[in-house]
Length: 177
Length: 239
Image 1 (cartoon, chains in turn blue, orange):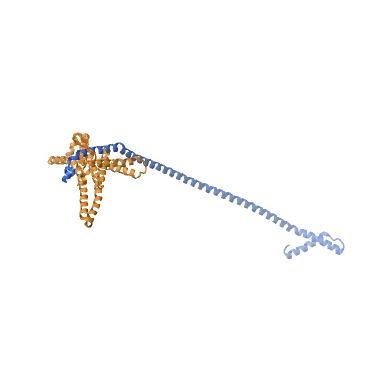
Image 2 (cartoon, each protein chain N blue to C red):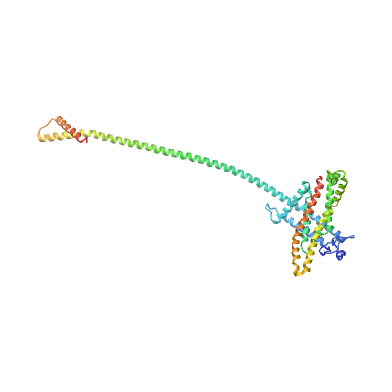
């Protein structure tokens, strides 16, 4: 009061010094007690918990990363294996198909050859047998013609010899049938 | 200087001849303490892994003070964390509440800062003697000093040690008082120069307000860090 009226520094007026010391002790003491007993331990616990949680999360993440790497490796291996297997299966299938095709082709060729051979044989046979038949038919016809013309039987063998000779001449001039 | 006046609020409380009345200074001590308790209690109650604003505020303050202590005084100072945290927050909040116009700055009173500083001084001295016994007196005898200079050095060291509470308390008190007085002076200029010339001191006043907020934080920080340094002397005795 005195100093405020005097206009000096109120800080140096001891009137309320004791009161200020008293209230400072009470307020600061209370603040310190409550902070140190209740509030700061909780904050510290929260921080510690967060730290632990983060560490734990990092650990799990690390583990999961390792696991996924392992899985990836396995996956790659499986893919490689299945690729190889697919190749094998394809090769086998191709071989099988090719061999079947060649087998069938061979059989077809054989059949065709046989057929051709048979037909050729028939042709050869008919080629071989046709002059004889023609000969006999020709000599028969000649015999008949002679018989009708002359009225008598002629020696058959001489007729056929004649016919044969004539035919040979013919075939020579026409160069076969 | 009206802003530094202490006056009684409510009835006069007297124990014997001692006046313990509740004053405006007491009111702002209570307000600061309550504000600290409310904010940090709110921050401490939440347990989110990803903190929200108030939780982040309290946790950042915690790690800030904790780092300050471990940087200056080492791991041995951990048991004194609560005290230094309370001290820093109390001084900071008192300074900051003092920045509100028409409020009262608790720390602008030498008696308050001196009681705090004296408490720290006595506490640190007791801790030093408990930790090192009479070996704590080696603090006054720096190593590697020529024998001729030793008596002088010891005297200087003792004086500097004993002046610690004074320098600590006067630094905070003088900074707060000077800042507020300066703002008052510039405010007075604004009024006396009127609408024509008052703009210059007004802009100064605005800039000073920013500066004073910085000083309010800085002085609280300096107060706490000097406490840590004194504590470091007492705990780790190597000069």
